[in-house]
Image (cartoon, rainbow, N blue to C red; front, side, top):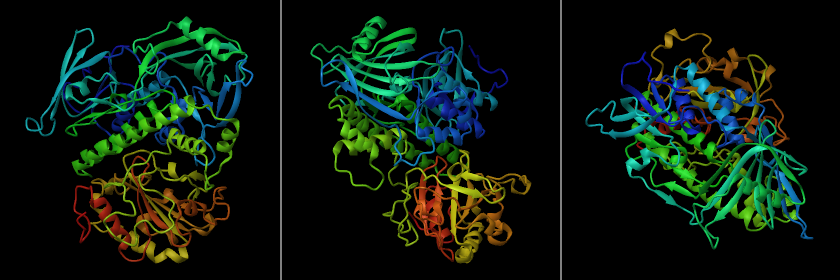
Length: 640
């Protein structure tokens, strides 16, 4: 499947050149294409991934894909879904392996909409993104590669990046001028090499892995589950796949071996023979093998993700780790979504260019945590097989209970991290912790359970206009907008505070009023997310039954314009069974007085503020947005 340069666009000027059409490049391209950017996207392969590679979508990533409207297309392929992990170890009698325990893939103490791992061939996932790109006028140019680039804003301040591209067989060349260049090339990144950015290897231990996808005939009882098997003959990880397939990961060599050789390999037949020994006393035979590969894995991270905030790295171009935890594609998705909204905020005139510095600081911290976790995860599986009593304890421990056992503690941390809900961004201009220098009694209300830099807590509410029960965190799509959640408490208590909030929001110098749409007078009556500003969507949630809420009476005009984002917090939730307003309670907000939660475009909490009478609430939010926005906000904006 070969795509030549588009003849319809002869201009060599693009907003961004994206190199590589794997998960990270496709996620970035899809976001920016939807938001109207001109993209040159190339890949050196003639077609999408035909077999093998990444296959695991973790619960948080499935939330993200649903928020983009892509989940249903992925689930249409009927992927395998892993709810539990089984552990098999040598039997006491020395005859083969026995199951020593199971645990939930995403235990109940994690508040996940989809408490399972979705397993599907990467090529099918890629095609879902490619189809969406085509709807937005972007074609992947194949098979083309990057030959070199330069970045100099003195030569061309608007399009400072010059990129030389070439067809892989040398039959064509192009030179592109762009505002940005992104490398999603994988571990062998030409862009990273030309920048002179080194990979820092965190763990001196490296491994050679064999991975095999195929259809097997076996009497092994847990072949449809994710399994980690330890035996006297070696270890293997079992991953169920779509279409009756199974993936096996087998460690072939380790740098701790006496005869260590990073180039050590094994044939397909040798790996199958090793697997048969490990599975004893069960039998396993291959009906067919779809893909087989041997590759070395070492833990590494790029020293920098960018040098000038014009040329960026993401995905495997800046971090590599073992396949055990199934984090590669998921980390790539979050790299891309983090960078996408920040590029959009800058290029759309909403934020200062300094915002782009937070991409490396936030995502590199996560990669560092991933590598540390990956090391612990390897020890969890390899160094000491868990006893059945420990597995049971880990499975049964609930939220809020004391954890005394190191294994249980490690397990819990592992599950939170592997699910994606453990990702946490440190305090910065976007994530205001309670210790932020802008001292105000309104910031981070006492008792709130929301943590800035973390994903917003799930909640069910009733949409007032149509009585539909909805997932609040999914109501605003990934569209580049900040989500302003006004938890309005009881209408009888917060009536004045809500009116004051709306009045101050409408001020032309507020964070909201300063970024109104140029076409605001021509916006359709049916525009539900962005009727006033392309950068904000406002949701109002009352701690009352739907039948007690009248939008024309209870909601100030500015907020009422978001009539499809007015909700009743009247749904019972098992996590807060005694609460009268479960969404308020889950967030840790006063059920009478409420509060305001700002959620970044990528779904992470930025700041939590009291809903107070007067101008205080909006004053704090002016300070928050003023820390990174392109305009001076408020009458007396603090210098932060």
